Length: 341
Ligand code: UDP
Figure 1 (cartoon, rainbow, N blue to C red):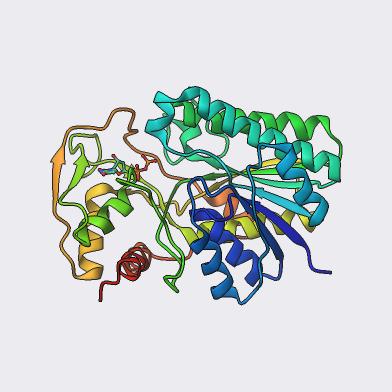
Figure 2 (spheres, rainbow, N blue to C red):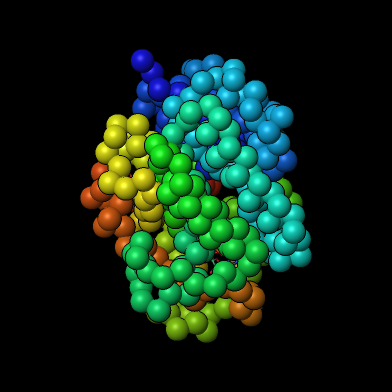
């Protein structure tokens, strides 16, 4: 019997790529999304890539009246919970919106799982929980630091809600995946990141600058204590990241979890600077990215990258794509969206 997975936030950037990889790995998928920060074109892209029907329900999953009927209609074996607000800067100005939304989403999802006897959940966490770690790269044992933003704090608090829930409710299993910096797009260029308005993240800003939609990229700081002075991050291809979810689901439904609550770092293990990323993008794609160095961005961390050895050995998963391949994919997606040859 095919296993079925509910993907909340499945019309979003990481959710849509994960839906594709799940279907290609032999799972049935149901997508729920309120489309508050996502487009139906992403679901259509998933259907086109996979040739699967992929049921979609427009729903605010923090509302039991909208979420529970999905569990009634589509009995599932597991949930991957992506649905959340994710703009770091906005969260500073609207903390209550972020706490209410992100916490009540997870709580409602866990309540639905209890009610309908669903025992497996993967939660989208973030390397933001490490803050500026004292020792790099970070392992899953690296202590979490005080969050830099309400957004980051919701990730930390949701991890704790999940940890306490699996402790209290027998049978319930959870895996928190701590994402590093997801970038790139599906090689088909049918799905990818769809930022609304001015992008906050580096790679969409780079692709939009290359496409002429933005005049100039601002590189936030070249006076950090790093080899070229710009910040270091661990940029992971979104398809590699999606596959980590498939591995996490397989581990839980296959009974291979070592503990009811587990945490894995999902990165490449390779630190890349902002300037290195921009120059690699230019070289791989043969395009110029107009940029200038400006002051540091408030709240930015100097450097963070993953020790991925635990995820590699335990999940049997490894990031495979090169930075070059990923940045070619990011540009391909931008061109496809904009109709650029
Ligand atoms: N960054 C930049 N210019 C931009 C956006 C980001 O120089 O327009 C830098 C940012 O300072 C950080 C890195 O790119 O060092 C990654 O930022 P992003 O917002 O993509 O992810 P974060 O690591 O902050 O979650």
